[in-house]
Image (cartoon, rainbow, N blue to C red):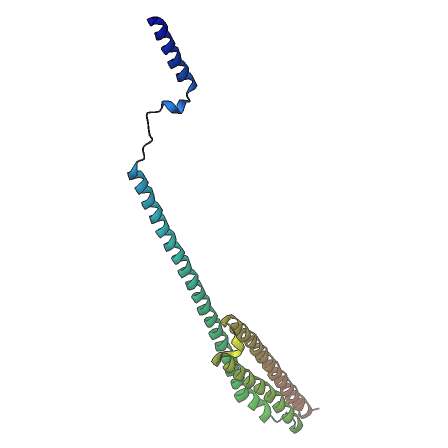
Length: 195
């Protein structure tokens, strides 16, 4: 009987051992390493701080990019205004020197003097209107424009100014050619003949 009881107990133990899932034979309750958990939390907090700093840096860099674009637009405006000023100075020089020579030439007829004067006066009037417009664009918040829009308008006015100088140069050359032709014609007509 003793051996039957031993066999029976051994059989039940063996049956329980085979029927119980494998996780049941673990050593007991799982343990947590508090140091690793605290370390993980610290890393997450530090990562959050770094992310916040990166976001601040990105915002700062965007602001600096906008500032550089504004400075670039202002420099474009300044360059355009400077070029328009140079073109107007060239116009003044043409008016003082070349136009005076053309109008004082004996080979320009009196009725032509009025046409030449009107032609150059229109150019000067256009130049003064352009300068007034530029003054309005730069001095006020002209129609709530951005600096880029203002620079674009000034660039357009700069091109118009260059075109004006080109027209004045062409007119001056044409009048000089007329004077030269008439001078040569006068010399041919008034030459002395020795035959």
